Length: 465
Image 1 (cartoon, rainbow, N blue to C red):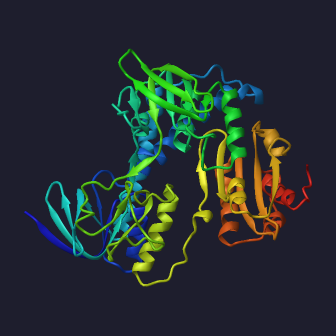
Image 2: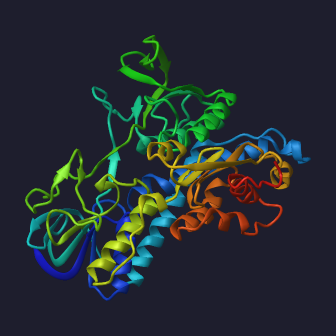
Image 3: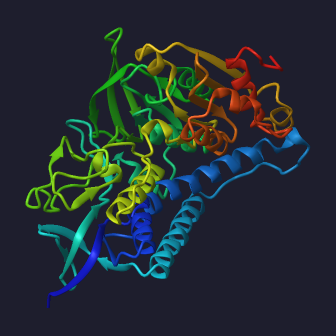
């Protein structure tokens, strides 16, 4: 039997964009509902950020124990139980999901389980179980995204997999070809190689991590090659044959046109995402889409007046924290406030491979394309006391500053890079002069000293170079 319920805001999707938006809306006094067809927390909590970081932590811990003898610790020859490694990641997801559920309940957000279909005029039909119709003056779509497929290649979940299946592997593959050298690809390359898998990464563009600064990408490529990870950039996948015992991937080098067949146990596709926009009634509700994503303006409004969309389903900055920021902006605007927008250049990017990669602002190539007059400061981790003491000397910090002094970008590759980048993100958010970053007192001994030194170097005043 169908029932109808009235709200002021309906949020469709409970990932980091959706659940944060719903909580903020409730704090602002809006009667709010959230609809989720799978598990609360969305892809990030259940099939993305959280379980992958748990796996990566296990890999880093395993490597650290193997290297313990260098620091005078006698631990014997370590081993691992792959199924327990995966179990830990699933437990991490479950605990985080329960935390999301608690927060929604605490903030009086009503949760509806099922598939949401827009019906126009503020109505949302929730399908599955007891069909329910919800009504609201405003709707916020946080539909998320899913892995994109290569043309002519189908993920069968066995030989050809995506990140979703990779997180649940009950046995570690002996060999894998990772198609796509972006964040997901490089994190899995580190994870699997750390446990002994033979890894080949194939990237169509001319560098790993295509959205990151080219110097960081070159450094990461060099480090991975030392780890015996094979890196093939400027290389296209021509075919994937699953007919044999394993998988044969035919690749072509773009520069030389040479063709090679690579045989592996599995292929992991990590070539981007497409929005979860099918079967949601978007067209019927007047919501326009473009190449697999929902079209939005700078305030996240769609072509339908009372419907906004945030996060991965819009094809913008494909990061969980970006979706959360967008969700807060959207609901504050709905509540009649005047939130301050966060630009793409103020949103930090983090890759949790080893060494970690983190950045905010413009890359050097982007600064060149804009015709900006800029200076570059660099500082390696190698001479830092903290890096020497902990045996983590790989990587460097790169700071890009406009000639007038404004901070344009900060790029870090190395230990704890993802924990260091918020300082640079704050500086970018406040539009600080690079001199402010350079004059900030960085405690000694820390890895963060490299950030201060790189800022000084951009001004021609580095103290330890």
